[in-house]
Amino acid sequence: MQRQIPRSVAFWLVGLTSTVVLLASAAPSPLYPVYQQLFGFSAFTLTIVFAVYVLALVGTLLTVGSISDHIGRRPVLAGAIVLLIVSMVVFLTADGVAMLIAARVLQGLATGALVGTVSAALVDLAPTPHLGSMVSTATPPLGLATGVVLAGVLVEYAPLPRVIVYVVLIVALAVLLTTIAFLPETSPLLGFESSSHALGTISPSIAVPADVRPVFFSAVPAMLATWSLGGLYLSLGSSITAQILGVANHATGGAILCAFFGSAALASTVASRASTTMKLVVGYSALAGGVLISMSAVLAESAPVYVIGSILAGIGFGTTLLGIMSEMARVSAPSQRAQVFAAVFAVCYTAFSVPAVIAGVVTGHVGLRATAVGYAIFIVSLIAAAAIAAVVLRDRGELPTDDGPSGAGALGGLGRDDALVDGLGHPLAREATDAGQDARDDGAAALAAFESGAR
Image 1 (cartoon, one colour):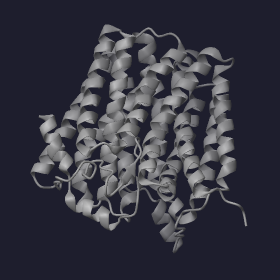
Image 2 (spheres, one colour):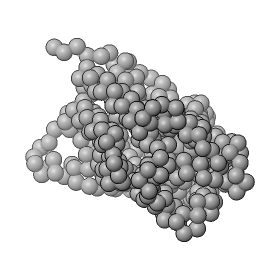
Image 3 (cartoon, rainbow, N blue to C red):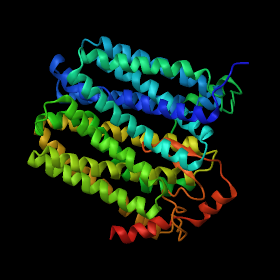
């Protein structure tokens, strides 16, 4: 019998896989200005190159996102990593916009297949709820932060910058691929009852159970705000730092982008044991404050102020998502979670791309500075809408009320139910226990507390 990696080691390996996958998705970002200059395309085309990745990801997520429950985690992980390596090869040999788009589509397809599988594997393998929370919340923004810094440094200082970045990623992915065969298989291996069952499983669908809808829809504005901001940083972020802030060094530009994603990773780790009230108040306030500071930095053309705003916005990004996505896991029964998170991912990843594409179009008409300011106002408006929606739903009784102790509340409490979710929406939730059911009955004290903070 083939020897398997111990479950504790396998957990860290899956967490590393999550980091590398997001690293690969962020790595092209510092290269976009290089491609733009080399191939001579517009800001709109640049956002299209960015957006097709997300559209491919969402399409894959809504079709094969849960297929590992049926055929196993390892086959899906292995197949998706192979496809991701192929996408890196296409990037490596790209000689025009068409190949860049093809590479991003392949990357999106691979990442979409990996998202649900990695999430499920982390659920299965987490040694403890708190450790699982820290790893799952920190690895995606850590991967994004590492990706933009690594690519920026290599582009600025390494020979053949459009080659070495992808060679490094291909090697890293190949090493991960060799370890997949030794992972313990944790899938329930449900199989398919018939060919129609198989077709039904991979048919695109999105739905939210009725009892989850109040929480889901109250969180949609915040999902849109956080992921739209992330999309701006990864699509037009490099252009903003170079053209408005005057940062010509690619490594420095990558470090500025890292300020946002790195602080998000750190904040979601630090906040994993914070009370629900603290997560929401700090998250919403930091997100709005950071965006406004960044907007003022764009107007003043101040890179240092922009870094401060990015760090603050990153803190808001990490803590807001931790709270909201944990609540999605908490209010969903185990049999509903795949369905609920498919809907969550669809909203989040759509927000990751569509506003960025619109921003690319607008930039061609009003300029990059005006677009960045308008985008900031859009984000702040969404944050205000999220706060109002939560308060209104709580007052209408469509959300429960929890006056329990810190950490056991609804929006993100990692106390009794220990619903664990990463900072970019990957669910990590234990099966319901009697204590977890008690937490469900207790409701959402955070909303009452947040109402006071919002006012």
